[in-house]
Image (cartoon, helix red, strand yellow):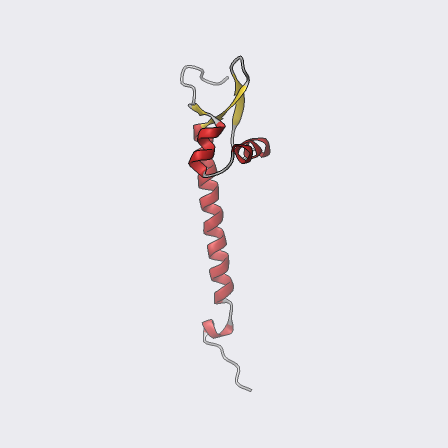
Length: 89
């Protein structure tokens, strides 16, 4: 059972969109894809996104960028010239 005495902070999709430089529709799409955790809260059932999930999403994006950079670096290093092996026919 979750500890309701210490709830996480929730922010509006508009606030998340401004922070991440996205549209509100993009933020809601991330919620529907499960990449951001959100819920409809209150009598008006407005979407709210968990602040902690924004940090998790940014960490995920940072890790993806790191892996892409490593992949490109390894791809470049795969050239024989980079290893000092040059065929002379």
